[in-house]
Amino acid sequence: MDAGWLNAPFALNGRRVWVAGHKGMVGSALVRRLARESCEILESEIDLCRQQDVEQWIFEYRPEVVVIAAARVGGILANRDYPADFLYDNLMIASNIIHAAAKAGVSKLLFLGSSCIYPVDAEQPISEDALLGGKLEPTNEAYAVAKIAGVKLCQTYRAQFGHDYISVMPCNLYGPGDRFDLARSHVIPALIMKAHEAKMRRAQNFTVWGSGQPLREFLHVDDLADALVFSLAHYSDLRPLNIGSAQEISIGALAQSVAQAVGFEGGVVFDADKPDGAARKVMNSARIREAGWQPQIPLAQGLAQAYEAFLVCYVGDGVDARSVA
Image 1 (cartoon, rainbow, N blue to C red):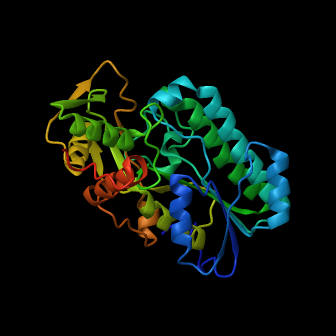
Image 2: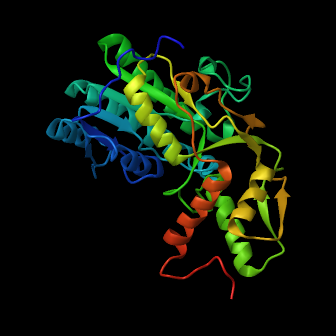
């Protein structure tokens, strides 16, 4: 096991922990997970893109631990159409929180990055050492650049000031709290919506962007939340830390799995005129696995949970959309 792991765990007991982005998919999962720890969870409603607001809040509430789960996120379409928004907002969020935390003397900070920080042609599975080793995937370059800046901020504040600031890079995430919006969703919620709509219309099939051939890795957000708590307690190093499921699946096979979870019995067709993104993207998460963390939620179980969450939040009001009248 490498030198980044602590001999004695960093204790969360009795500490004030600020989850920036507590209403998002990752932030809400982390709040649920932290409820099992003996810590005080802090939440905020401030504009994280405004430096003055962030500094004022952090000096007033004095968190001892900060997790930056806040971000502007979206799928291929949103990244393509709003690159300036993705770059600016995510740069401001990372810069404002990390700088304010350093000024306020925050003991530990965890910055949540993304697998898209790695080069599009990186050797697979992607190791942490691949960072800045080549060109980024064009469809989400703006988001990736902002996340790389956040990683570098953690590294430079650690190097210059000795702060225990770390960054973690999760693979593609899904689960409760995900955004179900075809214009902005990631792949799993978009597929759930399409399969559900096709089921309700008794359609023969639904359409998926791209060829269906790209390979991806997916991690349930509750598994990620557990990994974040594990990382806060045990990890302290300059290098970012990959977190993944180590199970890859083609988009085509994923679409079939989603159809099964939704109960749609028709077919899946692929629109090859739409972009695929990277041909393969799977993380090398050996370092955290060797340290003792493992994901617990299989994909089939997680997809069923994600569909249940969709029904509760977006269909709702007692209507059981799983059965067609």
